[in-house]
Length: 259
Ligand SMILES: O=C(O)CCC(=O)C(=O)O
Image (cartoon, rainbow, N blue to C red; front, side):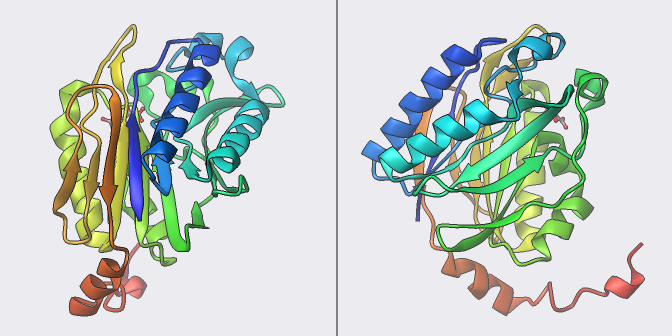
């Protein structure tokens, strides 16, 4: 499966310009014959949290309408990073995924909100897992700070996903932790980890990309560097079963001892 990582900069508080950019990346990924394209966290607004009342996508309608259309038109699946949404006056950091026919296959609200970026002052946390099938592969997707909670990721991965998508606005100063955590999640879950971070900066943070794809043994098979752009990688999903067959971590779990 050919996966494209759209490591983009985000126009702070300007959904219109961000939608235009995302559309261009979808077209470009399809032209390069990718099966699937992945976007970063909160790409519609960035962390313009105090402006969410006017700019968050109402019920995620615009995102669903446009991304579904672009997936279908370009015959490409989309893990649409996440967007700021609003429902009944409450805001969410919400991830949608679409198959290549434009069907919405997953909706997930970020569970762990990141206090140092004031997220919990504006956004409601999600409470639901995120396991879905995309391109015939059971998958999961989490958002940024969720990556630091191995118990949450295990809760999802124990349902059988073979690919974990991580979408982020992870600041430059902790990029070494980002890489190590992604490799750890790949090793412990014996799964591919496909992680897309943004580039650029906002009022508080500098973002430095380093989007990564890690194989089920923890080896980095694509490292994106610091610039905006699209990068592609081919993965062989059958590697997951091979690795799980060698060391049966999921079978050897002693869940009765875990609290
Ligand atoms: O955990 C971190 O260091 C970064 C998390 C973050 O930036 C976020 O969840 O938006």
